[in-house]
Image (cartoon, rainbow, N blue to C red; front, side, top):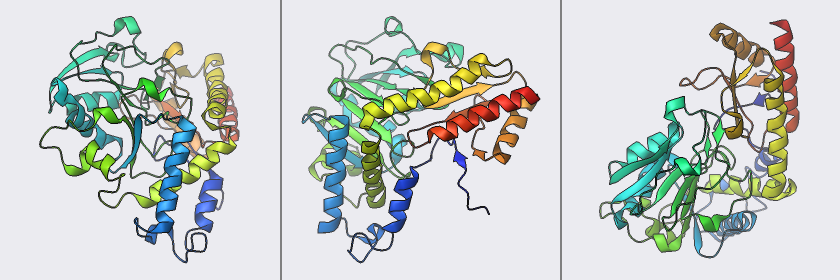
Amino acid sequence: MSNERIFNFSAGPSVLPLSVLEQAAAEMTNYRGSGMSVMEMSHRSKVYLSIFEEVKADLKRIMKIPDTHEILFTPGGATLQFSAVPMNLIGKTGKADYAVTGNFSNLAMKEAKKYGEIHVACSSEDRNHTYIPAQSDISLSPDASYFHYCSNNTIFGTEWKYVPETGDVPIVCDMSSNILSLPVDVSKFGLIYAGVQKNMAPAGAAVVILDKSLAGHELPFTPKLMSYQIMIDGDSMHNTPPCYTIYMLGLVLKWLDTQGGVEGMQKIKAAKAKILYDVIDESKLFIGCADKDARSDMNITFKTDNEELDNKFVKAATLAGFENLKGHRVVGGMRASIYNAMPTVGVEKLAEFMRDFESNN
């Protein structure tokens, strides 16, 4: 095995900042003179609680989360929230609206159907999720308990460029794959949730940011660990939380500060995405999968017009040190996931490789 680090374009679990991994390695066996690893600490200990409180404070500061909203660290990733959201929020009217613009919003919608009456407010399925519906295409129910959408569609490579207007209906957003990559007005949302394994930390948890006024109305059969009110009351510690993942999130947030916070990251990620989209737009070989006005800055999806050539590209890229570029089985082709921690140099080298591949094929 080589000691060289490859460029990892995985959609998740994904690349983490090298400096974060190095700091975690340096603190692995003895965290700041405590004589033990963060992995070994009691979650109730003074030293761990100081880590926990700092992570919450940093996330609140970086995302400008208002006092009306609570931050929760929950087990089960984003997928568990597909159930927790309706269990906690649908009881108000028994109804909810869902925008279906990709694989995960579709899965969330199907899961929610177990708990109430679900109305598909808009869908991009008619064109294989290559676009994002306009505000005028969203048919809202005035009596919905909430409106749910997924802000970035990892598999199809599309991203919402606006926050839908829903009147008095609270907005729930799955931000798993673009959280911390741009400023967000949290006050517009009733609830934001994100699996951490793309832009935040190693897999094993989700971050939930919710308006506290929405908690406390869960369906009677909601498991304790999925009740937002119980999680708020216990400060995410009704049971042992994903301690090490939370610690790693803290290191990532400190790294994010060095990049200029979410405002700085927005510029960096837009510049990285432009490098690859420019190659695709200038190419006679590569074809972008998503409509130009809906393209994701996080997941760049593209293909050639020949499946064999797609496979040849992925194999050649792997040999050249670019891993995990094969597109999701649902769409085929290629996908370069360029989350916050993907260094610009990795994107530049991939662009160079794509141009070389085209001239040779």
